[in-house]
Amino acid sequence: MADKIVEIHGHTVKYDETSDTLSRAVHHLKDKLGKDEAKVFFDAARHDRINHKTHLEIPNSRESDRSDNLTLVHGSDGEYHLRKRLSY
Image 1 (cartoon, rainbow, N blue to C red):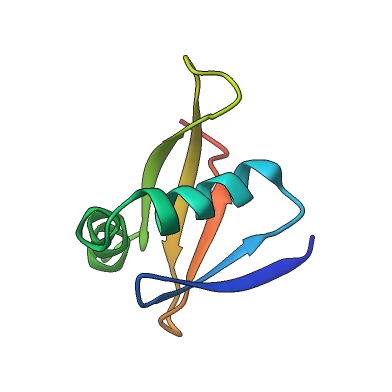
Image 2: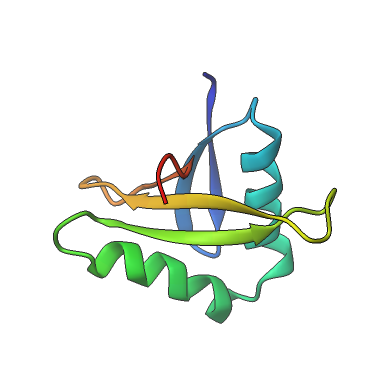
């Protein structure tokens, strides 16, 4: 796993850059959503006092009827970690 760090609308996000799914999700959050739209996800993860995370679905551009399920985790260092959702 090769973590890459990128800034998305003022938030530092780590993700596994070898994952096509996560790379598409970063592109979606960064380039397809406006700052206020993406802020909803970052705020939800930051305000979750127990798990420090939020779940989101990003459209899968290769299959129009499918979405990729992801988790955005807010770390104690203020950074976020974008991961594939392991459980639904």
